Image (cartoon, rainbow, N blue to C red; front, side, top):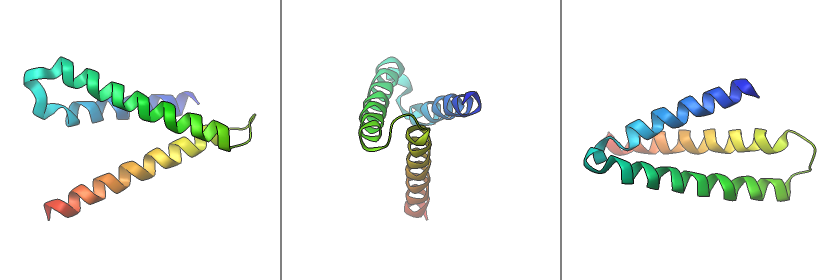
Length: 84
């Protein structure tokens, strides 16, 4: 679990730096909005997973990691396709 947490923290910090680079003139507001939207997404998705999946297992965290990684990969591939 610690290993996963470290990677999530590193990914989030690198993502925020890249995503907010264009908003350097209002970095505080952009950072606050970015993390507010991210926490809303996280809360909604994890709440849904907790409601749908059996309790007492690690399926919730595994499902969240799989969904987040898949969405990230899809977004990266779509951005690369737009730039070609």
